[in-house]
Image (cartoon, rainbow over all chains, first blue to last red):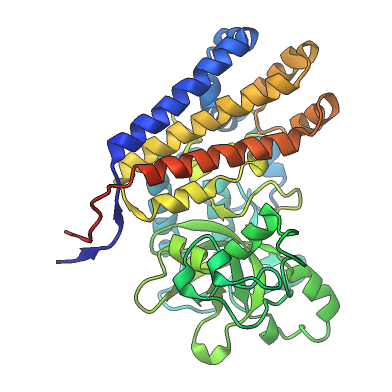
Length: 304
Length: 116
């Protein structure tokens, strides 16, 4: 017998609430913008299904060319095409990513070959359309495949306490500051972006980089809130995070740290509170990818 | 990845993290996700059209239909409207708040640890 400590939900009730909200939104749109609805009707398109329409455009090749042009070295890799990887449901996408990652990764955490690193970049591109790389310019971490352990919340502003954080308050809050100090100078200055920076933060071992001292000024700017993609190969769950702390120490046997929210999403907040992950830099210079779980938006891409 | 041009302004991932706390079948979760996504698009489209002068609406709809992920659409809207990015962010935050409240209200009251 196993204990499931998840909260019970009245799913039919929630479905009816969400459906009602959806009907209201549809009705409002129809009533206030009849010309727009006529436009969509002519195109045989439901405005609510716009993401599926966008996915069809992508997979039909109308946009795929421009997407590939922005991704270096992707064409030389023999991996499944976008259309064969994109799945409708998040759990299917997670299973696909997990299975393909496991086929690439060695059983033990170790330094990956450049070929394997490229294969993982290709896999993430195929699954999510993101450019995620082990090495960005001349900069890379010592590990991209390693153990991630649980971290506590970080203080976001002077006077912040764990009770001010949305969730996972039992994880506690660190007595010291994150690598970049407070996220905001005061509670009033805390923006939604900065809240997310703490919520989805990871710690990486910048202190063990061979060029950390020599390139300190450049590297500290480079790593400050740098976006990374973290994947749990066991379940395929994928989340976009930012670097906001340094650690863990080498003797812990861990290579990365994850905020309570990150660990919970990846399913690593159980047992020993650690697990193997892939951690790649996200090349997102236009800031198109928001922090948080990645597969839910993607999962709706294709229901044709 | 089929993106919509306003995706970076829509921060509703917290909803899906909330789902992880509940005992929900994956199929149900997929249905909820689909409904939420549709609602977001419809409400944001409504907001955009309310903010956009009618002279520009057809042009916007054409651009949107041609490539919903085109980031230039946001630049186009910024020229024709006021504070559109902020408005989209606020509407998305409002939707998130409403849905999180719906989830909480749908929690079964007789909560106890379930054994399977």
